[in-house]
Image (tube, rainbow, N blue to C red; front, side):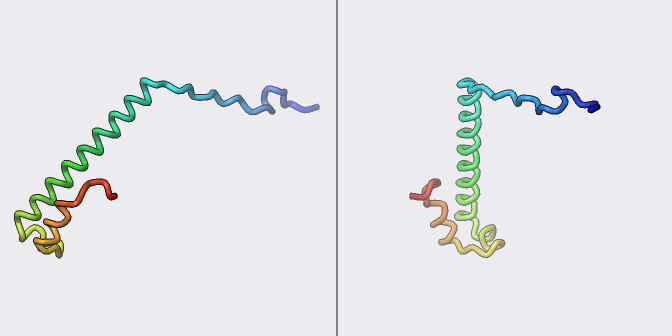
Length: 77
């Protein structure tokens, strides 16, 4: 005689996650804010490197390279 019951043999049903518009919008807003923050930090770094040639030279970048990168759009076309 087996010691397992039907309940033990059958896997438990995984509850489905419901779609929440509030959670989706909250996550989208957090994602957009973090994108804007990274864009702002990137622009500040490139502006600093374009102004101070020594900072760019420390990582092997010329001043005109830093200016070119600073003037590029954030999202590639």
